[in-house]
Amino acid sequence: MIKHISYDILSESKMPSQEIILVEDLSKSFSTHKVVDGVSFQVHSGETLGLLGPNGAGKTTTIRMLTGLIRPSSGTITVGGYSVLKNSIEAKRLFGISPQEASFHPHLSIAEDLYFYARLRGLSRSESMLQARETIAWAKLEDHSAKNGRQLSGGMQRRLLMARALITDPPILYLDEPTTGLDPQSRHALWDYISELKGRKKTIILTTHYMEEAEMLCDRVIIIDHGKIIAVGSPSELRRSMGIDSVLTLKPRRSFLSADLLALQEIPGVMKLHNSNGCLSIHLREKEALDEIVVIASKLAGINELNLKEPSLEDVFLQLTGRGLRE
Ligand SMILES: Nc1ncnc2c1ncn2[C@@H]1O[C@H](COP(=O)(O)OP(=O)(O)OP(=O)(O)O)[C@@H](O)[C@H]1O
Ligand SMILES: [Mg+2]
Image (cartoon, rainbow, N blue to C red; front, side):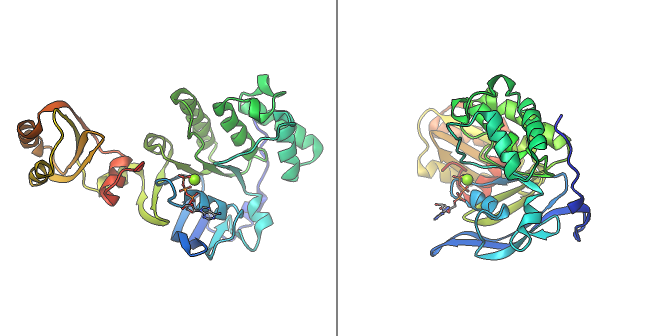
């Protein structure tokens, strides 16, 4: 078990203990391109907050501002009562980061890598040795501790990045796409690590493209599109707020024509249609529409396959923006 360092700094804070991170009207422009646009949110102590959005939505830029890596064009960020801009030393003591893009030194073993990170974070030599050992054990990398980061598998590299983030056992963790590019088995293993951190009441901000990851791990989700927050809530609140009862997916025998889609859209209870990759997905306000849809769709194009499911966060995004997260 990782040594638990006490964070008295938090109890000195002037903020209500509930809101450990407070972001107000945060914006960032790169030359004339505004990539984060007036973002405000709070994160409660012990909460896991998901930042969801398509490529280029501004998630990493937001994390880089939250962690003081880049300066906002405007807005404020307070962590544990400390301004990330004005009291950066105190604020930075409170968090660890697992970045989206990471580099691994070719001449440092992972044991040395973690020792180096601990020293950078101000731990003494003996504390650094201890924490490097503890975090290697936590990440189940003992058998690989003599390798350098580049010699690890993708899943192990992600665990090493989490170990770096945990090196001082901070109360807040920023995990930027901790599972992107991993095979499903490694992704599930990473979810177990993140769940363990949730169990230890860490406050976590997690960015992801995987809806099931957000549904499984996040207490609340912020959906970002083009640098703006377009929805906030728990996964179930977000699904309910859209008023979608269920989602019907149809694989037609022949492609639907535009006129077919118009006819299906007219059926009472149909909210939104999305035709992509030879599949039509239909958001239903009520299941009563189902019979009529199936009859009409079979007449229009035939049906090879159909599936009815609960709406997912992906469907929420589709309902809000008219496009899928990966389009
Ligand atoms: N240093 C930079 N200079 C110029 N433009 C940048 C810079 N960093 C990011 N951008 C732009 O800002 C926008 C948001 O990028 P960001 O990396 O925050 O997106 P993201 O939501 O993390 O996307 P992804 O899911 O692909 O990681 C993109 O259009 C990107 O090209
Ligand atoms: Mg990113």
